[in-house]
Length: 244
Image (cartoon, rainbow, N blue to C red):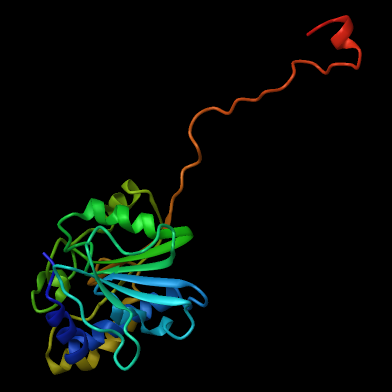
Protein backbone atom coordinates (compact mmCIF):
# COMPACT_ATOMS: atom_id res chain seq x y z
CA UNK A 1 0.00 0.00 0.00
CA UNK A 2 1.45 3.32 -1.09
CA UNK A 3 1.47 6.27 1.27
CA UNK A 4 -0.28 9.49 0.31
CA UNK A 5 1.94 12.05 -1.37
CA UNK A 6 0.83 14.73 1.11
CA UNK A 7 2.10 12.65 4.04
CA UNK A 8 5.41 12.06 2.28
CA UNK A 9 5.81 15.75 1.46
CA UNK A 10 5.01 16.78 5.02
CA UNK A 11 7.55 14.34 6.42
CA UNK A 12 10.47 15.17 4.12
CA UNK A 13 9.96 18.90 3.71
CA UNK A 14 8.11 20.06 6.83
CA UNK A 15 9.54 17.99 9.70
CA UNK A 16 12.98 18.15 11.27
CA UNK A 17 13.31 14.37 11.32
CA UNK A 18 12.30 14.11 7.68
CA UNK A 19 14.85 16.70 6.57
CA UNK A 20 17.53 14.84 8.55
CA UNK A 21 16.54 11.55 6.90
CA UNK A 22 16.59 13.21 3.49
CA UNK A 23 20.10 14.54 4.08
CA UNK A 24 21.40 11.21 5.37
CA UNK A 25 20.11 9.10 2.48
CA UNK A 26 21.03 11.69 -0.14
CA UNK A 27 24.54 11.92 1.27
CA UNK A 28 25.03 8.18 0.83
CA UNK A 29 23.60 8.35 -2.69
CA UNK A 30 26.03 11.09 -3.70
CA UNK A 31 28.98 9.00 -2.52
CA UNK A 32 27.89 6.27 -4.94
CA UNK A 33 26.81 8.59 -7.77
CA UNK A 34 28.61 11.92 -7.30
CA UNK A 35 27.39 13.29 -10.62
CA UNK A 36 25.21 12.52 -13.65
CA UNK A 37 26.48 14.98 -16.24
CA UNK A 38 24.69 14.57 -19.56
CA UNK A 39 22.66 11.61 -18.33
CA UNK A 40 18.95 10.93 -17.88
CA UNK A 41 18.06 10.36 -14.23
CA UNK A 42 14.70 9.09 -12.99
CA UNK A 43 13.24 8.42 -9.58
CA UNK A 44 10.23 6.23 -8.82
CA UNK A 45 8.00 6.23 -5.75
CA UNK A 46 8.95 9.28 -3.72
CA UNK A 47 12.60 9.62 -4.69
CA UNK A 48 12.55 13.32 -5.62
CA UNK A 49 14.15 14.45 -2.32
CA UNK A 50 17.29 12.62 -3.48
CA UNK A 51 17.40 13.95 -7.04
CA UNK A 52 17.88 17.69 -6.58
CA UNK A 53 21.73 17.57 -6.79
CA UNK A 54 21.45 16.19 -10.35
CA UNK A 55 19.22 18.95 -11.71
CA UNK A 56 22.12 21.20 -12.67
CA UNK A 57 24.16 18.86 -14.87
CA UNK A 58 21.92 15.96 -15.89
CA UNK A 59 20.46 15.96 -19.38
CA UNK A 60 17.05 15.28 -17.88
CA UNK A 61 15.59 14.47 -14.45
CA UNK A 62 12.19 12.76 -14.12
CA UNK A 63 10.18 12.14 -10.95
CA UNK A 64 7.78 9.21 -11.46
CA UNK A 65 5.05 8.96 -8.82
CA UNK A 66 2.61 6.01 -8.76
CA UNK A 67 -1.13 6.61 -9.10
CA UNK A 68 -2.15 5.19 -5.67
CA UNK A 69 0.31 7.59 -4.03
CA UNK A 70 -0.50 10.73 -5.96
CA UNK A 71 1.75 13.38 -7.43
CA UNK A 72 3.02 16.79 -6.44
CA UNK A 73 4.84 19.42 -8.53
CA UNK A 74 8.61 19.22 -8.20
CA UNK A 75 11.06 20.91 -7.91
CA UNK A 76 9.73 23.99 -6.15
CA UNK A 77 10.45 27.22 -7.97
CA UNK A 78 11.47 25.48 -11.20
CA UNK A 79 9.78 23.88 -14.20
CA UNK A 80 7.88 20.77 -13.12
CA UNK A 81 9.51 17.41 -13.95
CA UNK A 82 7.29 15.09 -11.88
CA UNK A 83 4.59 12.94 -13.49
CA UNK A 84 1.80 10.68 -12.25
CA UNK A 85 2.13 7.21 -13.73
CA UNK A 86 0.74 3.70 -13.65
CA UNK A 87 2.89 1.68 -11.29
CA UNK A 88 4.05 -0.86 -13.88
CA UNK A 89 3.62 1.10 -17.15
CA UNK A 90 5.88 4.14 -17.24
CA UNK A 91 5.71 6.77 -19.99
CA UNK A 92 9.38 6.23 -20.84
CA UNK A 93 10.91 4.61 -23.90
CA UNK A 94 12.73 1.31 -23.48
CA UNK A 95 16.40 1.73 -22.63
CA UNK A 96 16.12 5.49 -22.09
CA UNK A 97 17.29 5.85 -18.46
CA UNK A 98 20.93 6.03 -17.36
CA UNK A 99 20.34 6.22 -13.60
CA UNK A 100 17.25 5.16 -11.65
CA UNK A 101 16.47 5.65 -7.95
CA UNK A 102 13.58 3.75 -6.35
CA UNK A 103 12.52 4.87 -2.86
CA UNK A 104 9.11 4.23 -1.23
CA UNK A 105 8.27 2.26 -4.35
CA UNK A 106 9.32 -1.36 -4.09
CA UNK A 107 8.36 -2.17 -0.50
CA UNK A 108 4.91 -0.58 -0.88
CA UNK A 109 4.10 -2.06 -4.29
CA UNK A 110 1.37 -4.69 -4.62
CA UNK A 111 3.07 -5.94 -7.80
CA UNK A 112 6.82 -5.92 -7.05
CA UNK A 113 7.71 -8.40 -9.80
CA UNK A 114 6.05 -6.35 -12.53
CA UNK A 115 7.58 -3.19 -11.08
CA UNK A 116 11.09 -4.66 -11.28
CA UNK A 117 10.42 -5.75 -14.85
CA UNK A 118 9.51 -2.16 -15.70
CA UNK A 119 12.67 -0.89 -13.99
CA UNK A 120 14.71 -3.32 -16.11
CA UNK A 121 12.93 -2.23 -19.29
CA UNK A 122 13.61 1.49 -19.00
CA UNK A 123 17.31 1.15 -18.11
CA UNK A 124 19.65 1.54 -21.05
CA UNK A 125 22.88 -0.33 -21.79
CA UNK A 126 25.23 0.29 -18.90
CA UNK A 127 22.38 1.79 -16.88
CA UNK A 128 22.35 1.51 -13.10
CA UNK A 129 19.68 1.63 -10.42
CA UNK A 130 19.67 2.11 -6.65
CA UNK A 131 16.90 0.62 -4.53
CA UNK A 132 16.30 2.17 -1.10
CA UNK A 133 14.23 -0.09 1.18
CA UNK A 134 13.60 -0.40 4.94
CA UNK A 135 15.96 -2.70 6.83
CA UNK A 136 13.95 -5.41 8.58
CA UNK A 137 16.40 -5.41 11.48
CA UNK A 138 16.49 -1.61 11.82
CA UNK A 139 14.53 0.70 14.08
CA UNK A 140 12.94 2.70 11.27
CA UNK A 141 10.92 -0.25 9.93
CA UNK A 142 9.40 -0.75 13.40
CA UNK A 143 8.03 2.78 13.76
CA UNK A 144 4.98 4.05 11.92
CA UNK A 145 6.03 7.64 12.60
CA UNK A 146 8.05 7.65 9.37
CA UNK A 147 7.35 6.42 5.82
CA UNK A 148 9.88 3.60 6.30
CA UNK A 149 7.53 1.94 8.80
CA UNK A 150 5.08 1.02 6.03
CA UNK A 151 5.23 -1.75 3.46
CA UNK A 152 7.45 -4.84 3.48
CA UNK A 153 10.91 -4.41 5.04
CA UNK A 154 13.78 -6.47 3.66
CA UNK A 155 16.94 -8.16 4.73
CA UNK A 156 19.90 -7.53 2.46
CA UNK A 157 19.86 -11.13 1.24
CA UNK A 158 16.16 -11.02 0.42
CA UNK A 159 16.53 -7.83 -1.58
CA UNK A 160 19.57 -8.98 -3.56
CA UNK A 161 17.93 -12.34 -4.32
CA UNK A 162 14.81 -10.62 -5.65
CA UNK A 163 16.89 -8.29 -7.79
CA UNK A 164 18.95 -11.14 -9.25
CA UNK A 165 15.74 -13.01 -10.09
CA UNK A 166 14.72 -10.05 -12.24
CA UNK A 167 18.01 -9.85 -14.16
CA UNK A 168 19.78 -7.23 -12.08
CA UNK A 169 23.38 -7.64 -10.98
CA UNK A 170 24.05 -6.22 -7.46
CA UNK A 171 27.32 -4.30 -7.48
CA UNK A 172 27.36 -2.27 -4.28
CA UNK A 173 25.40 -1.85 -1.07
CA UNK A 174 25.42 0.36 1.97
CA UNK A 175 23.16 1.43 4.80
CA UNK A 176 21.85 4.75 6.08
CA UNK A 177 19.66 6.20 8.85
CA UNK A 178 21.58 5.14 11.94
CA UNK A 179 19.95 7.74 14.15
CA UNK A 180 16.75 6.66 15.96
CA UNK A 181 13.45 7.61 14.28
CA UNK A 182 12.63 9.99 17.12
CA UNK A 183 11.37 13.58 17.09
CA UNK A 184 13.01 14.30 20.45
CA UNK A 185 15.37 17.24 20.42
CA UNK A 186 18.34 15.29 21.81
CA UNK A 187 18.29 12.70 19.03
CA UNK A 188 17.69 15.30 16.34
CA UNK A 189 20.69 17.33 17.50
CA UNK A 190 22.86 14.21 17.69
CA UNK A 191 21.63 12.81 14.38
CA UNK A 192 24.49 14.03 12.18
CA UNK A 193 27.12 12.68 14.57
CA UNK A 194 25.35 9.33 14.87
CA UNK A 195 25.08 9.10 11.10
CA UNK A 196 28.79 9.75 10.59
CA UNK A 197 29.64 7.16 13.22
CA UNK A 198 27.26 4.60 11.74
CA UNK A 199 28.83 4.76 8.31
CA UNK A 200 32.12 3.57 9.83
CA UNK A 201 30.61 0.50 11.49
CA UNK A 202 31.78 -2.88 10.13
CA UNK A 203 28.17 -4.12 9.98
CA UNK A 204 25.16 -2.64 8.22
CA UNK A 205 22.56 -4.20 10.49
CA UNK A 206 22.04 -1.02 12.52
CA UNK A 207 21.00 1.17 9.59
CA UNK A 208 17.36 2.00 9.01
CA UNK A 209 17.51 1.46 5.25
CA UNK A 210 19.47 -0.58 2.75
CA UNK A 211 20.72 0.98 -0.48
CA UNK A 212 21.62 -1.54 -3.17
CA UNK A 213 23.20 -0.46 -6.47
CA UNK A 214 22.58 -2.76 -9.43
CA UNK A 215 23.34 -2.87 -13.12
CA UNK A 216 21.15 -4.22 -15.88
CA UNK A 217 22.10 -7.78 -16.81
CA UNK A 218 21.73 -8.61 -20.49
CA UNK A 219 22.15 -12.26 -21.45
CA UNK A 220 24.02 -13.16 -24.65
CA UNK A 221 22.01 -14.85 -27.41
CA UNK A 222 21.16 -18.45 -26.59
CA UNK A 223 21.89 -21.46 -28.80
CA UNK A 224 24.93 -22.70 -30.68
CA UNK A 225 26.49 -20.71 -33.46
CA UNK A 226 26.71 -22.45 -36.85
CA UNK A 227 30.01 -22.09 -38.66
CA UNK A 228 29.72 -22.46 -42.41
CA UNK A 229 33.32 -23.18 -43.46
CA UNK A 230 34.92 -25.54 -45.96
CA UNK A 231 36.40 -28.72 -44.56
CA UNK A 232 39.69 -28.14 -46.40
CA UNK A 233 41.02 -25.33 -48.57
CA UNK A 234 40.22 -25.72 -52.27
CA UNK A 235 42.82 -25.06 -54.89
CA UNK A 236 42.02 -23.22 -58.08
CA UNK A 237 41.44 -26.30 -60.28
CA UNK A 238 40.01 -28.61 -57.63
CA UNK A 239 36.49 -27.70 -58.60
CA UNK A 240 37.09 -29.08 -62.09
CA UNK A 241 39.30 -32.07 -61.34
CA UNK A 242 37.87 -33.20 -58.00
CA UNK A 243 34.43 -31.77 -57.40
CA UNK A 244 33.85 -31.22 -53.70
